[in-house]
Amino acid sequence: MTSVTLLNGDGQVYEHRLTGVPVTAPALGASAPRVVYAAAHVVPRVAAENVPGAPADLDWDATLAFRHHIWSCGLGVADAMDTAQRNMGLDPTAIRELIKRSAAEAKGVGGKLVVGVNTDDVGDEAISLDEVVTAYLNQLEFAEENGADVVLMASRHLARAAHSPQDYERVYGAVLARATRPVVLHWLGPAFDSQLEGYFGSTDVVAARAVVRRIIEENVESVAGIKISLLDAVSEIDLRTEVPDSVRVFTGDDFNYVDLIAGDGRHHSDALLGAFATCAPVAAAALAALGDGDESRYRQLLQPTQALSREVFAAPTSFYKTGVAFLAWLNGYQPAFSMVGGLHAGRSLPHLSRLVRLADEARALERPELAAQRWTDLLRVNGIDTASVARKATGNQSRAKRSA
Image 1 (cartoon, rainbow, N blue to C red):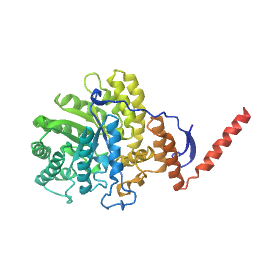
Image 2 (image 1 turned 90 degrees about the horizontal axis):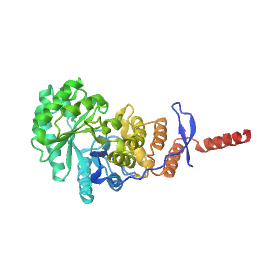
Image 3 (image 1 turned 180 degrees about the vertical axis):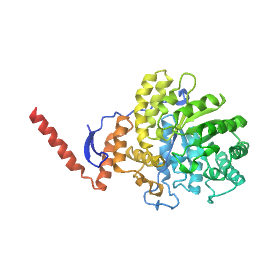
Image 4 (image 1 turned 30 degrees about the vertical axis):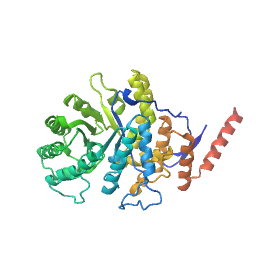
């Protein structure tokens, strides 16, 4: 059985034996009991200048192969969203190329795809409400021209320009009126992006939710659903009871998704989660169990992934992308632990150690021996003598046997 060296919170090393048995994803397809998307990250070209402030230079083969991995598990892909480093390194040119390429790949395999539409083509920090509408429409038209369904992301520009709930209603109404097919709205909370504090016109969640409800009701034919990423299960449950029946609520709550997806007998959430990019085969198997009416098996499979997700998304939450890329690297989906803008340095070794342990417990290490080797190599690069830890562990075992 494979063992690895891990670090605890104060940097002390210890030995951990990998025990998780990898999960084979079932063929979900149309039998899936929920509409589920995994938000995918991007893989940088290792030999490129992917340093802070530089334009993203992506490894397209690895980036697109990861999307095929998600599709092969029967899940949809949510692309060009926060997990793909929107507003944290992915520049407008790379965003458009990502949307174009992912849409073509999705069409080729019949994979479900939604892509993020925002206003981040605009370099100026402060723009008018009319300019916000124009910026949204530019990206909306590009996504639709490439055949992709759309997630209308929360805009930093709109958060700065809006002075009232009515400003949000006006902007969203103008954009939704131009959509050629229904879109998914996205309510992203300040835990993910502090610049979105008070989005929809209020820091009071109940008041903001009323604005969201009005936007949906006034544009219901243009709204397929809403992703809610507040890390607040109560607000999500309340919203599920308030929106029209035709509008899906997609959980973006990476802390509480197990219960939210299962539902309460009357309502449930669909899912659009960065967390599922870290454990797609396990998530697919859990959903298959739920579809078969075996909620106990669903929870048995998915609950450990939620413990992993809570660590991946631990504060500061915006650096969760580092954990997503790290686990993709451990599982062999990218050649190096590297990220656009050098964001792979966004988490500590003790944090990454916890991810290794929790991923093992969640059965999310798809190739345990490869994961162990890559993790050991990373420790060595950082000056951790894994050989001495292994010798100490062997010595302790020998002494224990002699004592017995």
